[in-house]
Image (cartoon, rainbow, N blue to C red):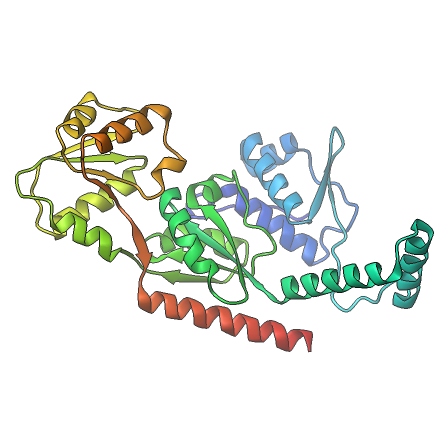
Length: 331
């Protein structure tokens, strides 16, 4: 194994730099299948990292099939499948074996035919689809835009919260052929994307027309209550209110630090701005506040976002292009 060189001033997380170099050495044959990597402790000492960072790197490599971790035995380089390798077993023999097993079970041949047909169609359709990683920093926004992206023909979507990726808590699946991320977070994400070699496209998020219309009709001088889960969401709300020329007093509270003022003002009928799909993630206390606000005829305004029309058309074009490339590769 060659020496690992890390750039601690880089925006790419250290565990990804380490994992990327190990993966590259395995791809170039410097690390051969079956070779044992340094233990997490020894690798941490050699690379000047914490054991936790090395552990994240090894887990990331295992998720991508580069290494296999053995409990108490270390991590070993895996033999990676190569394109164009012929099957070890004759396809006709595999089919014959399948039919023989079914015949022994007593299943009628017509039922077997229907099941096989359904399975083949399902597998073919799944294989034909492009898989995209949809990345956003705000989980509420992520869940609200995911169905829109999933409506793109022949596209499967997997959702990821940016912080989970950069911290190593989650890894983008090897099934994903590309990633979509909002323009405002592109610079944070691109180092990670380059490290795992995944093509990345951006999209613009804008407040929905319904949200703008609701905010625009809030009377001047009336306090506005804002309930938020992330600082990013709060900043976006305040930016939009400023853009609309709203100078109303703002009573802001995170779910973790619920203020009694929020409950008091909501009971007085003040507008309450909340994230979209908040009910799916809120605590019991927050749900009680929202419920009492509704009973008091308080205006509940979900701060909803949508993908800009131009960005949407670009995402469709990108998905169609990858779909065509996939089709050409299979031909």
